[in-house]
Image 1 (spheres, rainbow, N blue to C red):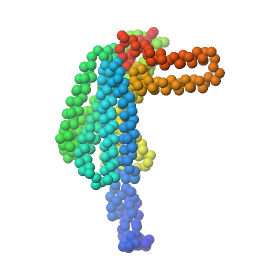
Image 2 (image 1 turned 30 degrees about the vertical axis):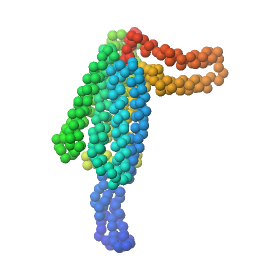
Image 3 (image 1 turned 45 degrees about the vertical axis):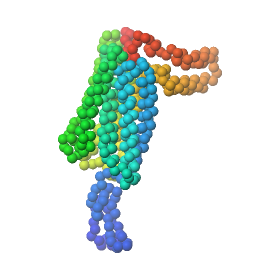
Image 4 (image 1 turned 90 degrees about the vertical axis):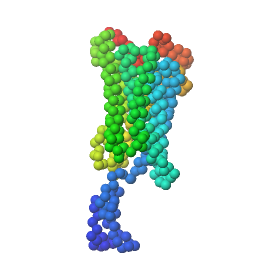
Length: 405
């Protein structure tokens, strides 16, 4: 057999190995996983060693459960608590949470159908391409961009509150007008896609319009974020100039203000971390090369999956991004929601056990502290904090306190 290969003029290219068919007594080229053809002359661009569809199906299911948990907990606060529901940020967050859940559901359904079609090619889902266009390419992308816009609007609203001490429940015309405007822009953007059923590859004008809309939504949302952040940072400097510094240090006082309002900057940072790595990675890949090219290593595949999946993380973690970093929202959550009250009991239970483990021989002061800790929960549920119970104080989400000079 070795002599048959050596005598044959068949020249296998690209590391192809000569093989012998014993039955027909002929030779052939045994190609590597990234080449095909009679002499391995054809390059396979997309990798087939790893089941990418199955990986993204798992990612979508995990993301769906996390999204439902975070957004349901968020809606319990945003809708159930009147002090939050009446604010501009509260209206934005209600719509944001609903759209986030819908986007996660659409993504999971799309990945499930894709996996089903690959496992059962001759299934009854002959009309799936239309559903993929409407629910995946149009529906999911529209909802994700809407979440970016709403998050940017929340950042602007917070910047307005800090800069001009605007009352959050004085009027709700800003979020209503903004949501109507975003709805009109979204409907105008998706109408050509619906008419032509996402066939932008064969229609140059539609492909150009799609590219313009993608860049508009990305750049405009990013610019809105930058404007809101600059608005907040400038207001910090103005506050210091008006009320003075702490211990005569401008930088120290500025950092204290920044840290006390860190919850403002967490959502923009989360969106930046989610989109910038994928944008940089995708832009560095040549146009003739696939994102998951053939011959990719396991480590590189995992890294690229994580980078691409980061784009869907901010809408999934609504509770962690908007509620948990805020002391005001967390206090409202503990006091006015069913899940918050149960969570507060669990946290206090573990804190008491942790303190008891570190106090082997309790003193009189320890016994007094234990009695205080027993009363802590009832006092918390009855009175809350002075910020929330004060009838004259607005729920601004980020009150800026004067710095004592």
